[in-house]
Image (cartoon, rainbow, N blue to C red):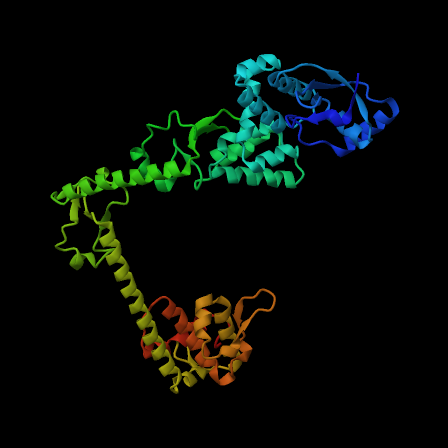
Length: 477
């Protein structure tokens, strides 16, 4: 029979919320030519002789768009429960229905009709597991639901991602998924499980995941004090496989939980250390095998001369069972060691300042000019040409290292130039005045000695040039 379009009411129960415009236009063209071949299913409503649509909303929308006054219908007396079940079955037969639309409608049937998943599964001829998995999709975060609706991923991806939602590692997983999708790559469920999730959970994300069987190196001493009692049945503990291999190890993705447990482990470890340290202070000989590797330091007068006075009467100074002397207070040891290092650095700085003052005083005297005359090993004297001295200086610069050149050329800053192509600094001997060549040779040779923290006098400086003339080829003969 035909029924006026205006008498048909849409229930709002239809699981399909999105209607493809191009498909509706195609349906309109078909109705124009052939009419509505399959009647709409409706049920009578108690008020005003109107009817409620049960199946055929797409056909009704097309009829309204074509301004049809009547449509063919099949009228059935149905309860609310029966009407909702027919709507679900009718839409499940269509492939274009979104899994989330199915899940939302299934949840509505269970809530409104008070039936179990098993009962509904029998009525729509699906398994209970299928019903349960559809309902699980409703627990997915909005960003995953959006990807399912846009069909960039499917419901199987959603089920695989659900256990990680709400944990910090979830951001790492989603970042990689979006990266793959943006690059136009297909993310299969297998690739998601084996590679993306496998790398995120079983990889090296120590900030988000804790490998319960193999703690990171900086936390390994806490593994023996970590409380694993609740980890066995905890849903946050995952067994994952990388590259499709057999799942190995246990990885906890609940960062808040494992960090709390790590802090408790630190407290337990510190208590044991304090107890052990307290007992050690009463002992004269210590077995270092019972201590952590960083709980003591060896004391040696040769390498740590300060300990001869600073540690002489300290209660933390003990004899080791395996021989030698140790300090069982690493903080105190490190503090004294740093203090000694700082004093040594200051001393070396002062020694270098003194050495450079000696060099500069000598250069400002008349002695460097005497280097124009050279006496060889037999006592015979030679006049040294300026050309030879420049050659000697060039050889010194060629073989000198960075610090030697940097300090040696300080009196002639214009000669310290930057290489245009490579960007490093070099010494341009041609920019040093002729009268300063002997001084430059002395200063570069002195810089090498000062760099090795050697002390020398003016007499030593006077012997630098003869040594240089014999060491560098082409000098004096």
